[in-house]
Length: 147
Image (cartoon, rainbow, N blue to C red; front, side, top):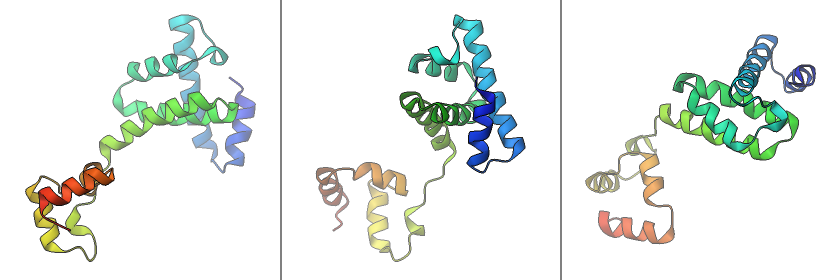
């Protein structure tokens, strides 16, 4: 691990010393995992190694570890690994994210909310998922009897 370069990179990004120490520790833990599991170093890592490491962690640690790895991979310019670590982290973040209830939107018609609830849609996340395409939005409007 290029600890000095990573430290400088994080300082330029405005990270405080205790945050930098924690991020570096997370990367070192990954490095130790690699050495113990397959005798690899950080420069030999591929997407499969990152995924295997993430599965090895408990959920509460996964988010922090993937953040640290994504930052380190960004520092190194390893874009494929950045994407992998970011996507694993996003899954963990999504588990704790609370979607906005439709009734909390300012100016939304109560009749529309009631109709959407009848078809099982009560949050913004559900509405976005149900209306991802033009066709699915048209079908949703038909099923919920809304404009």
